[in-house]
Image 1 (spheres, rainbow, N blue to C red):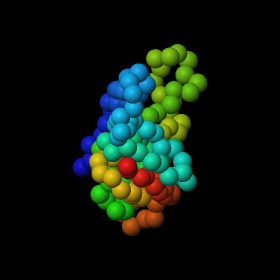
Image 2: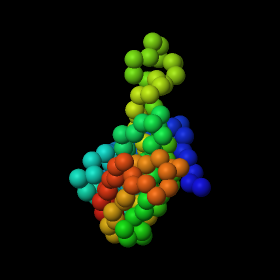
Image 3: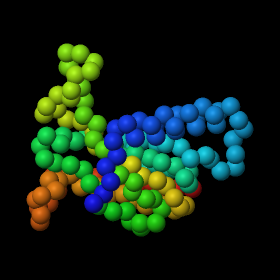
Image 4: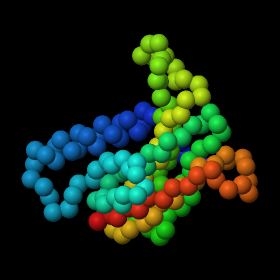
Length: 148
C-alpha cells in the first residue's frame, strides 16, 4: 500500500522549500544547486531538477467520481523515488473561510517525488477507478524529468 501524504505535510514541504530559496538568495550560489521544491503541471514541458530536489506533479482530479490519479512507474526507474500522494479539495463558493470542501467539485491530485540520482526519466500516471480491474484508464499523463 502506498503512503498518503496529508495536505499539511505537503504544505510544510512547500514552506521549507520557500525558506530554502530565501536563504539561497542571501548567499553565493554553490557549484551544485541546493535541493528545491518544484511543482510540475504541464506534461509537455520537460523539467530540469537538481539532485536532491523534491517535486510535486499536480493533476486535475475529481475524487467524487471514483477516479484517482496513480503513479504507474518511471522509465527508467532510477532517477526519482515516489514518496506519496494527496488530494487538494477546493473550497470554491463556500459561505465562510472555514467551511468544508464542496461536494462534487474537482480538485488537484498531488503526487510527491524525490530526485535522487542524476539522469532522466519519464513518469507515467493513470486516471482510473482503482476497483475496475482490466479497464483502460480514463486518462493518462507522462512527465519527463532530468535530474542534474
